[in-house]
Structures are given as C-alpha cells and as structure tokens.
Length: 431
Image 1: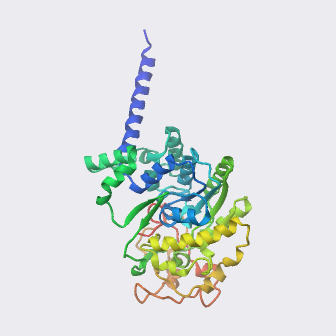
Image 2 (image 1 turned 90 degrees about the vertical axis):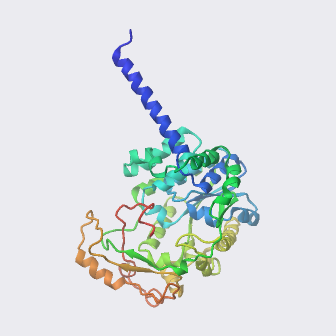
C-alpha cells in the first residue's frame, strides 16, 4: 500500500505539471501574436546561411534593410529585431539564431533606451517567448526577465494581458506558429497596409505620417542625484553577450543607433548612456561604434524628416540609413580608419546642430506623480525646471538652442529625468 503522503505528492506533481502545460499552451496560442515578430523568428529558425546578424529591438526590424545591405557588402544579412526587446531578449534571440547559424559577425544594435534599465518590458517578452524553440530556453528567458522586477506571476500568466478576443484570432495565432508565411499571405489584406514583411527580418513601413507634425511634453520628475551610467545588471548582461558571441566564434560589434536629432538634445541623459556604453565596451574588449556622433557626410541629417513617430522611420529613411551603415561597415571590414566620419565628442556634435525636426516641452507638475525613493526638494526641482522650457513656434519648427551658441556645463544643458518604474515598456518612451 502506498503511503498517503507519497500519493499526495504525486497528485500535487501531476497538478503542477498540468497547470504548467495549460499556461504554456495559453502563452503560445491564446495571445495576440505580433505578426512580424512571428515571421522573423520563423525565418531565422529555417535559415543556416546568415553571415551577418543584426540583433536588437524594433529599430533593427524597421531600419536595417537586410537584403539591401547583403547586396552592398557581399555577405548574407539578417535583421533579428524583437520589438521592445532589451538585453535579456537580445541574449535569448541570439541563442535562437545560433541554433542553426554561425554568423561571421554579430552586430548588437543598442539605443540608450536599451540600457537605461535592466528590466525587459513585458511587451518584449510577449513578442519573443512563444517563439523560442525549446522549453529550456523559454524557462531561462522567463527567469532572466522576472528576476529583475519580481513579476514572476504576471510574466508567467502573460496571456492575461494579451489574450485573443475571438476564435478567429486564436486560429490566426495557431496559423502563425504552424504555417507562418502561408497564414501571413492569407491574413495580409486585413493587416495595417503601411507595414510589409520584406524577408530576412526586415519590415518596411510606408506612411504619410511624420514626426514633424508632433510636439511632445516630457515631465521632469527628478532633477538631481541621478548618475546616467550603466547599471550593474546591464554591465553583467553585456559581458554575458560578449562571451556568448565569443563561444560561437563570431565577431562582435556593438552599434549605437543614432535615433532622431531631437533625442540627443531633448531626452535628458540620452548621450550620457551612449558615452557610458562606449567607455564600458572599450574597457572590456567589445568593439563599439556610436552612430549618434556620425557626421552628415556619413549619415545625412535629412533622415530626421523620414520619422513617422519618435522612434521609427519609413522605408525611404531606412534605405538611407542602411546605405550609410554599408559605407561605414565596408570601410571597417577593410581595416580603414573611420574616425574622421564621427565627431570627437558631444560638444563637437552640438556645435553642428542647427535644425531640429521636433521638440519636447519640459515642465514640472507639482501635483504629478513623485518618486519618494529619491530625497530631493520639490522647490529645487520646480525652480530648476523653469529654466529648461523649450519654446516652439509650431509643430514643424526650427529651434536655435543654447547647444549651438555656447559650451554649457553638463548639469545645465542636460537636466536629469528618471521615470518612476524605469520600464522601457511604459514611461521611458513618451506616449
């Protein structure tokens, strides 16, 4: 006769296993699939010919025209971009890439939003987790993201936030897992006509909307006491990524994406993170290039006019950027000195800026949300913020700022701002 305690443990184990299977099924088939992330992951799983891989967030997916770059540099390229993906997602997607591919180059594409937090937004998890090949990799990725914020339950029951609304959506999700490209062609007439999956991970966007028609407001919540530097967890993950690439025998290049000119001027700490990353890479044998400091002869400033929101360009802008990258990378591969194509520091860059396609109006709201974890004076913040209001004549505006006329001390030209939850998926990108 079996001991009742042992029988009870068996029942508990069976219940937990059943629950895990149900949750895994729900997180895979009962959520609204990101169509383009699904296509990207499906394609990378079937490829074994990738020689140059660009790894990153939606910046990679939307701006690196992989087929165009392949033809220009003579190497087969792939844009492995997962929307809202941070370093945890970069590591997990790169492991997936390495299952069948041994790229000569792995190019980790980072923007300051990638490293201003050690947290991965749940949006990134939703885009990536269902498409990792093995349960072990899914568990490893889940643990890496949950341990940073403690959201073990929310991240385990991801389908609660992204559940399908109908049986039709459920069938589409199943189709995107079992027959992704056939399903895409079938449902394509119902999708946003502005977006098209072009293959090799690249999604092209065509729209008449432009960021020049927007004026955004950013709130200064914290002004003093914060150092814009890489977090310890971020440093650990960067080293983990370096070692992962080295173990595969691939060559690593850390690429800092330039974004809009307005980001460099209006987002507090934007350039600080890029500079901190450049220093860290230099200290740890990680080749790094900061395209934020690219001169117009390498990366034309006219690309700002192609942004349809504050972070993504339409296809014509992506082509211009991709051509600029090719010009740089071919010279880099040839061992040429590319330093003349970049400004030496932020002050040289600032002095070159005379036109900004968009702006942020920075204000302080005394009745707004306040992060009590930082001991700061509301009065001091309110007084300081009064001196950093950017005035705009209209939405499509040329601004002459103090960056262009004088070398202002760091604490003056770059007021600090820190979002309370420090989560890329929510406040760090202004909505």
